[in-house]
Image (cartoon, rainbow, N blue to C red; front, side, top):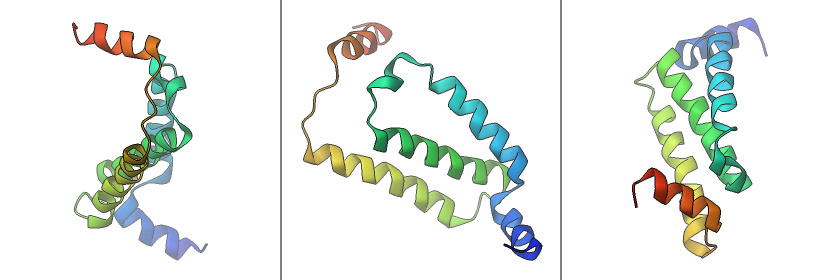
Length: 103
């Protein structure tokens, strides 16, 4: 990849180092959450990719429609898989969610 392409991408995607720091700080914080281990690989990766797209919105061009389309696309991929499955969440995760919601 040439410097010219990198400079072009910075216009829509933002500075790589700033985004990488933002994304990795976020990922470090959420991977320690109780429910993280209960997520399926596609859910974890969708969250990661959504954060990548959010970083492009926040550090790059927020009006670049591809960023917004991509976010909805990753969420839709997981939602469509979930609609095809009826895998219940683990009981301890369910109790934790209910207690956080005051149920």
